[in-house]
Image 1 (tube, helix red, strand yellow):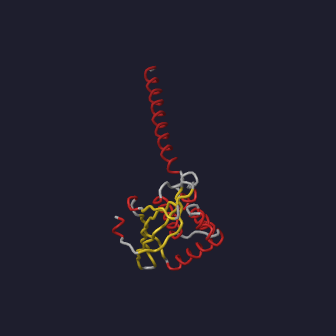
Image 2 (spheres, helix red, strand yellow):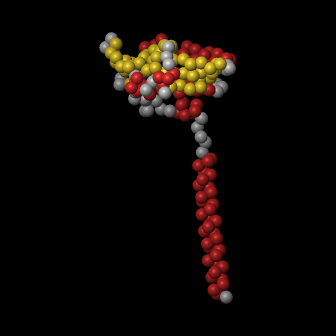
Image 3 (cartoon, rainbow, N blue to C red):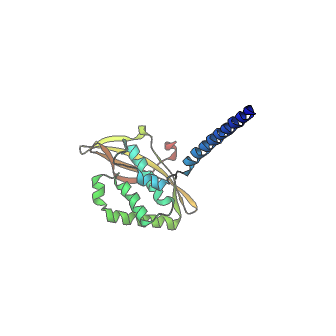
Length: 191
């Protein structure tokens, strides 16, 4: 009789341990699922460019393209567009900032986003030239770099390709966007 009671007690303890371990594993897995995944917008606005500024001219253009792609990817409030455009301004050279005061830049970007939304336009993909294709020069005593970017855009029902060349100037040991312009290009240069 004592032996049977001991077996029952041991069985209950083992069952409790197994159930407890199962409960632990189930909750551990679910707690990871409960964490909210950040949207692309949230990732961009929470990224600290002051601490993690891109080290290369190509990296600056890549970060810029990620931000502008988000402008048009979905509907954003005016305040959200302002936060995104504030991130792009952190990538701009002081000369470009002087020519684009913050309030007029915000309004310009919002108007551009409204136009894109009206046309149902969307940046499908962006790409930057390889690091080997970045051209470096010295102009008027300043270190500058030229980075070419490729854009594949859906414009209503049509698809378009465009190319832009960015000129970045090194200032305070950081590459900043000074200007950019549309150019002719070949998407096969980006493969």
